[in-house]
Length: 550
Image (tube, rainbow, N blue to C red; front, top):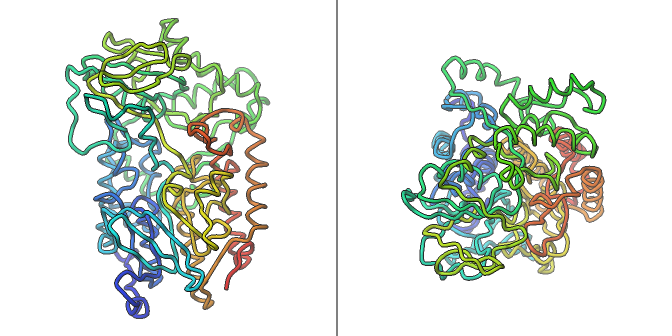
């Protein structure tokens, strides 16, 4: 593969002192981590990925629950550093399921010979910046300590599952699973009484998939969701040839759209259209069966309450047409928040699952789950719902959780966890003031924390980090740190854009509302992927203005 030939580590890198001394330690072997290894290794650096799982894949290694699949089209959920690599992979359909995506990431790891620099089954517990040596010390559960000039986190934005959501889980007599820690072996649902907690994007995928298999399914619903029906055609050879021919165009286009997808706002503001044109476009977007209605229809949907309500009602009507039953409509159709201010899932037969005689819907917003008992779930009113299997689709401590679960300490021993427990802040989602030579991907205050086709945003961040490190090496520099003034500027810029939208007025995991005590701030930069990219490029073009380099 001539376009992706990897440079061998330099002699200087190989002459490091000690087997665990590296130029860079990367955490995580998912989409970002694999590419980060590739980029840094091509700079001639000695690099090691530390991965807690037994294989590559990140999100697609851990989230193997029934029905798991992504909702970015396969032809854009790709790497762009090699046209040859892009054209060698042949997705089976528009939105492939988890096994195929995991297989693709294994294909990339093998094709680029990445495994030799990945250490599996290694969980990082602590990372400390040593001000004397100007290097990071990274500790693992296995008792190893790694020494690195650069510490790069590629942990993912949804990788810290909320597993212990209810007291008494250890007393349950049946089987209990969190969707983000699903076992590799198949689970037999036949004839079983199954309870599932959570109806976000993950819960929806599980429910629509297992409903036909289980004996009886109890869905514990707190917050109903707007949905978009997924259109998932199989790809033919002709389809694949067509999109592969667009590689140069897509590589250039995706990083410059609002959400990193192959679509963008182009119809103006909704409020300026005639009623007939509004209906025409909404129907077109709806029938597309992708996230275009949410992420590339009308920008004023995110800022204008009247516009948002009109589009929300359009979606409610579509949901009513499928649900029919007035009681199901009351329970399952959102009315307390607007379309697009939460994560919008794609689904395939989710609403129809509730028409099945073996599916029971239990509202827990006003009568919440208080504990798990040996028999099942106990509600506030004392009711016990008996189950053989409990599935927790209870989500994640998003954006920040993967890093606060590691004891990361910067200058003067300051704790990132303690800081973020007070206020979640970063410099462009790429660094944190007070933590020299720490680079972050999928961290708060960047699009990659939520509002982006993840392969687009993660590759942009990895490229920025690699080019920054390359610049430092060419200039003979050893340490880089974001200044407090620049971080303050970025936080203010982020908040100004976020607070002009309806998203910040809604409780969701986007705002950290699903984690008790988590500081409230929109986790994802909502100014657009293209704008964020330009902001990052401008900083680099000015010699990394806003950072101190020594």
